[in-house]
Amino acid sequence: MQQTADKNRGHNATVPRGWGLPVRAVVSLLIVAHLLAVLAGPLSMPPSVLGNTLGRLFRPYVEAAYLDHAYKFFGPDPGPSHHLRYEMEMPDGSLREGTVPDAGEHWPRLWYHRHFVLCEFLNALPHADDDLNDPRLFARRLPFPGVQRDFARSYARHLLDQYGGKRVTLYLVEHVIPSTEYVRQGVKLDDPRLDSETRLGPFSRPRAWRPLDAAAPAAPPERSP
Amino acid sequence: MNVLTRYLRDLAVDAVRGWNQFWFTPADPATLAMIRLLAGLLLLYTHAIWTLGLDDFFGEHSWANRAAMQTLAPRGLDDQPTTSYAWSYFWWIDSLPAPWSHRMLWAAHVAALAVFTLLALGLFSRTAAVLAYLAAVSYVHRLRATEFGLDQVNCMLAMYLWIGPCGGAWSLDRLWAGWRHGRRTGQTLPAVQPSVAANLAVRLLQLHLCVVYLFSALGKLQGVSWWSGQALWYVLANPEFHAFPVEWLARWPVLTALLTQIVLYWELFFCVLIWSPRLRPLVLAMAVPLHLGIAFGLRILPFGLGMLIACLAFVSPELIRRVLKR
Image 1 (tube, rainbow over the protein chains, first blue to last red):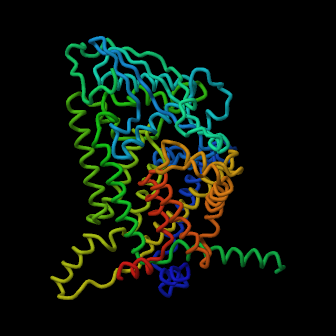
Image 2 (cartoon, rainbow over the protein chains, first blue to last red; image 1 turned 90 degrees about the horizontal axis):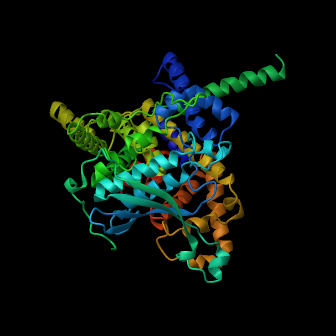
Image 3 (cartoon, each protein chain N blue to C red; image 1 turned 90 degrees about the vertical axis):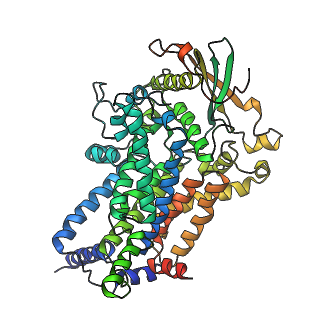
């Protein structure tokens, strides 16, 4: 296939033709610069001397062109999965409970997956108890602890706005994947003992928002009382 | 001239010749055009999804609102935010007063979908390719909280299309040119000319894809489960991903380990083996079950298909034309 491809590309051009030397020289420099920028992202996550140097040199281009990723798909280790559970106090005193993502509400699959990634993103954010010297924080490219709280507040406000609630409590639910040994011993993949919750705190409706009696309680029906 | 000097001179001459042949040999744009068509459809689908809840992700009370996103701004040694180059026109739209921000948000979204449609159809192809890349980057910079591998593949594909004549085949541009040529001369349009720019675009995509696979494998080796052979079990047994019952796999740890290490070593050596004429068909053939496995087995269909579209960069234009003529 390669031979065919190169023959096809060649067009009797053992000596390349088409672009003159000055153009080829300038384009060659641009190619080298671009490829170094492509390498800067993965080389600097986790940090390395070479990666950080390239990262500093090409930072404007790398960020603007969206080249700042490590390409660690399912790496270094596939971890547990995460979703959000919420309990929302409604203006009439009732309680609305739900999860994000919700297979019943979030369809098609890509739409579900985007909501799933929201939860994984929240979990990956550094929180107040994190050690500033932990190199994994830098590996995640995130600035300092406490960011998780800011995003949890943003998620909470979104839910309060969407459903017209007074107050919402978020829980980050972690589902651990059992090892093959556990499964051979009879543990089911959806065993509730594999779940653990972290309370992300209650969040109230901001006072600056429109009063609740004017807020239209939004869309889907409650899942449970 | 001693042996060393002669060797270094020959090395330099060969390197320059090889560099020129690799980058600056004119190529049939068929490969680039096929990637354009498929990447255009992928970009259209993955961005059309946002229509289901544009305000949920871009509005004033979106999941990741402006205030939260600002906490991700890079910081200097004095702990103050420094300039971020992760631009997005959605921030400008977000700063508009209501109701203009809402109207502009929808206008920008519809315009982006129109651009992706033009790209897939191959109408004003190169202009559409530039705009598609800018739009795709703009979405993902605003939506960092929902970003995953699909966005990286989307932007990688869009990044190189505009460099070459991506509308050189299977496009409305080509049909239009043929119709105009026929009216003017009464003859059919001559075969598309080989182009250095087409080769350049495909070569850049090839090398970018090699970087992706290499660092994907090196990233996996920073953990323990890919080395120990358990990683694929932990991926497949994740209830967020598996599309079929997988408990039976727990009784076959050797099978899981074998599949895990095939994936790992295939990714690790892709950047070397893919350049061998004999091995390239085998390497690409292995990409098909791997990425279709991700697409259907893990239910991440667009990501799996996106990686396969990127792998098309290694398929010769001649083969693509031959297959499509059948």
